[in-house]
Length: 98
Image (cartoon, rainbow, N blue to C red; front, side):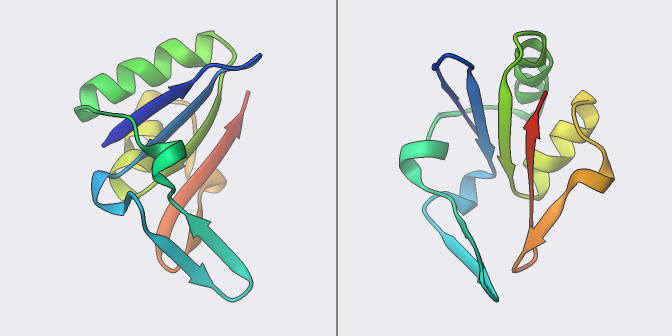
């Protein structure tokens, strides 16, 4: 998976499954655009991504997470539960504002 930490007044952590980068998914009037400029970060293991998520939640970051593996890692990290996961064209995603 790819992890990109965008430094702003409140850090944004963008995480996606590697194979989804650069793709656009549409369902009805909804669109999920996995842009390289936003999600294109460092390729990392699930364990490292979980560690980053746990660290960044303590920093009051927001999270944009796309893809089955990435969303499952967020669940394992304890930052999201099953009820906060949406799907567009079968692709799971979650947005977390802590």
